[in-house]
Length: 102
Image 1 (cartoon, helix red, strand yellow):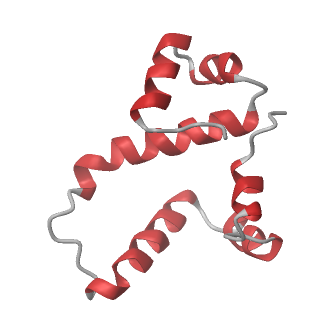
Image 2: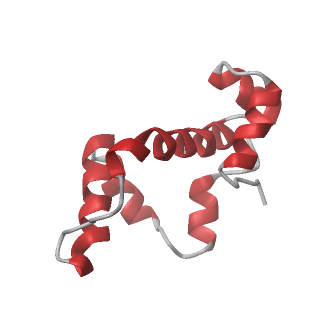
């Protein structure tokens, strides 16, 4: 398994704990996204006017999948294979989404 883990990174930043991870595990991905969007809009009276969520979902999900691929593989080469893309496309995606393993 990779030395990089999004869960460990979030734990180190005190953003999640085991109890929260258990709760998250009981949600579907769709529910989790909906909850995050609702929480994000609470201060805005549940409005995200001007934010093009629908057309940006592709980018949002690709960034999440890139982070996941790094978390479950040993290295970037394996992560690219895991996603079924070339190493060059994988490196480009990491750069485009400003993702690093540090």
